[in-house]
Structures are given as structure tokens and as C-alpha cells.
Amino acid sequence: MIDFEKELESFEPIAEIDDIEDEIAKDDLEDVLDILKAISEK
Amino acid sequence: MECLYCGYEFANKDKCPACQTDASLMERIFLVSAFFYNKGLRQAKEHDFYNAEKSLRKSIKFNKRNVDARNLLGLINYNTGKLAEGVKQWIISTNFQDEQNIAFKYIDNFQRNIREFEKLNDSVRMYNHAIKYLKKKNDDVAIIRLKKALDVNPNFIDARNLLALCYIKQNNMNKAYEVIEETLKIDIANPVALRYLKEINIANGIKTKKNKPEENKPVIENISYKNNKKSSTGEKIAFIAIGAIFAAVVMGVLIIPAQINAKTEKYNEINQQYEQLQKTYNDYQSEVQGKISTLEEENKQMKGVVDEYNKTIANTKKTDNIESAKKLYEEGKSVEAAKLIASTDMSGSSEEDLNEYNKLKANVYSGACKELYKQGKSYMDSQDLDNAKNTFNLCITFSDNSPENKYNAYYQLGKIALSQNDNENAKKYFTEVKNNHPNSSIQGYASNYLSTLS
Image (tube, rainbow over all chains, first blue to last red; front, side):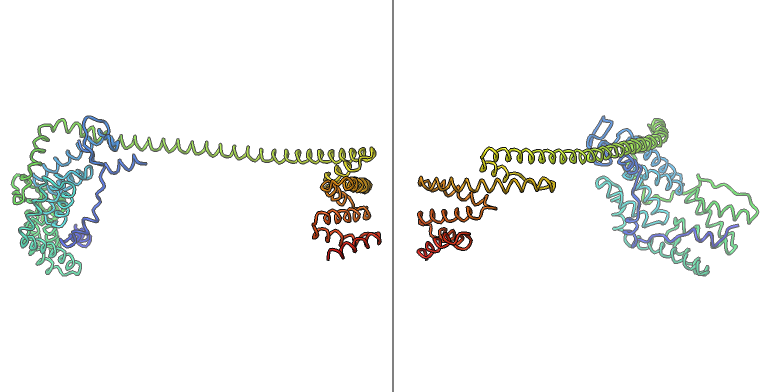
């Protein structure tokens, strides 16, 4: 049986177009190559 | 190929000549990214947007510059209601590739259809409001908002699922089923919709029915990724070489973790070597420090020995000087003996030695003073005034116990100064004689000279 309250928690507000700059700033652009590069630099 | 790190273009090289990045590893990573892009593309074509999104996110996780994957991800997000997320991916994409990038066309499309775009953004606002209303237990208003949102954008998956949830809560399974059925036509394997469908079927006592993907309508026709020439070419190449790519990808998937492990092992190995070196260096430093301390101690001891030796030498020299002086004095060479005694440093001598020295000094000086006065007079008689002056001065030096010779010497120096018209020194010498000479007659002579000078 679905627990409505719990289920509702899984629905999060979606970014509106005014928030786009914040959304871009928040984006983690690190990829595998960056990770490998970081490891190799160590 | 173009190095992802520094952008340097090179070919047939194991490493980027500019930044030394492993080119073969880079190539494998490109292949993995391409593999996930192709998978995402296939899933998107089958309307499996949920899994397509997952694949495309993996693709850009391997290569953030895979603009085809990023553009398609943006398109899926945009089409399923996540408007800002879609635009965001396109903006990032244009930053990675500013030429021949379909993302520019998508963004331009917005700017040309700003009213439609505003409406789509309103649907997001309505969805967000609906969540707030539901949290305040205002289900009816929430349902109205969600319906309005879906009127604007029927492909808005999250709004569909939330509306279905509202109906399930209200136990309106038929409406819930209708919403979900439509949702699964848009996004055939959406796990939330499938879960709700299962719930509805359980509630209705029906076995879960499988969705039929072939009946689904295409939903992203309006802004089609087929227009992306670059994607189409990539797609063709991908299909032709799919077997080879897949093999390479499998290799890549297997090799990359191995490469990471190898690098981690290498890092650990270097770290261990560094620690070993550090330990060796510390040991060496302790050893050197110990040696320095030992040497310092030895040096200190040697210094003591040298000091002791110097002391012995000095004492020996003192003894020798005293013995020599004694001998010279006995031979009648008082002046030489006096000079030797004057040059002997008696500091640090025993009291006994000092007494012996002082006794000898008194005798020697007295004799020397007497002899020097005689010598001075002799020089004066022969009119050798310079030697006479030097000799009388030396006589005064050794005159500790001979006041008469001392002031006689002053008297003679006064006379020499007078003869050389050095009245100032003459006055000085005669004043000494007048004030100190033990013989009053000579004091009187000095006074006479002084009276002529005043």
C-alpha cells in the first residue's frame, strides 16, 4: 500500500526558468577524466 | 584527436604531447561515453525517457564535453517538463562547443517562441504550487493545479505521477489508471508510474498488465534530435561499428577500473617510497646530528687540550723569559733584561712566580734605568739629541724604583726641548722636575728655567 506522505516527499519542486543561473552554478561538471587527472596529479 | 584537458590536437600518440595525458585511456573513456550516448538515444527512441536520462547522465559523467549526449539529455528534460534543467544542459553544451551545436538552435527556438515558453514555465510553477497545496492537505486545489499544468504540457511526467498519486489517495483508481496509462505511453518504463499501476491493479484485484511500447506515440517530435546532423552521423557510425565499439566499451569498462586501481596502486607505491625516503632521511639526519654532537664534544675537549697546551707554552715562555732576563742581568745587560721582562705577560701566574718576577723586575729596572740615564747623557754630550731623547724616555719607562734617575731624565729632556725651541714640552718637563725631583737643588734649576720660559 502506498504511503501517501512518504510518496509525496519524493516529489520535489522543479527548477523554474528564473533559477537557471543557480542551477548551472550548482551543476557538478566533474567527469571521469577529471577524476583520473586528479588521481594522476597526486 | 583533441586532448580533453588542454585542447591540443594530436594523432597517433600514446600521450598528449602537451600535457602528457594518457591518450589510450582518453580514447577508451570517449568510447564509454559514446556507448552510453547510443544507449540513451535508443532508449529515447523507444520512449524510455527515464532510463534514457540515466544513460545520458552516465555518458556525460564519462565525458562532460559529449555535447550530443548533453543536448539529448536537455531535450528529454525539456520534453518531460523539466524545462529549466533542459535549458541548463543546452547552455552548458554551448559552452563546451560553440560551433555546429544544435543546442544553439534549441535556445534560439525558445527566444522565438517566448509566449509558449512562458506557458511551459507556468506549468512548472503550477506543479510546484501543487506540491505545496498537498503538503497543506489541500488535495483538491492541488489536483486543479496539476490538471492545468498538464493542459499546458501533457508530457510533464512528474505532474502526471503526482496527479495519479492524488487520485490514488482519493481512492479514485479509475482516474489514477487513466493518468498512468497515458504516462506510460509517454515514458514506457517510468518506475513511479509502474509502481502506481501495480498498486492500482492490486487494489482492483487485477494482475499487473504489461505496457505495450509499440503502441506509444512519439512525444518529442516537435523539437527533434533528428535535426542534429552531428548526432545522425555519429548514430550511423555507431550502428555500423556497434560490435567493435561494444567490445571496446567492455574492454574500457574493465580496463578503466583497472587503470584507476593501477594508478591508485602506483600512488600508494610512490607514497610508500616517499615514506621510506622520509624515514631514511630522518635516520640520516639523526645520525648526522649525533655525529655533530660528538664532534662538538670532541672539539670542546680539543679546545681544552689546546688551551692547556697554550697555557703550558705561555708558562714555559714566562719561565724562559725570566731565566733569560736573570742571566742578562747577571751579565750586566740590564737594559736588555728590562726589555725582556717588560714583554713578559705574567697574568695567570702563581703568586710565588709573581713575587719572584717582581723582585727581579725591581732590580733589573733599577739597573736599566741607571744605565739608560748614563747612555742618554753620553748621547747628549755627543750632541746626538734624538737618541738622547729616546734613551731618556726609555729610562723613564724603567724608573719605577729610581725616582732620582727618572726626574734627572725629565730634566735632560727639558733641556733638549729648550735647545730645540720646543718651549711647551720644555715647560712640561721642568714642571715635573720642579714638583717631584728628590733633590731640591735640581728643583731650583728647573724653576730657573721655568722663569725664563714664562
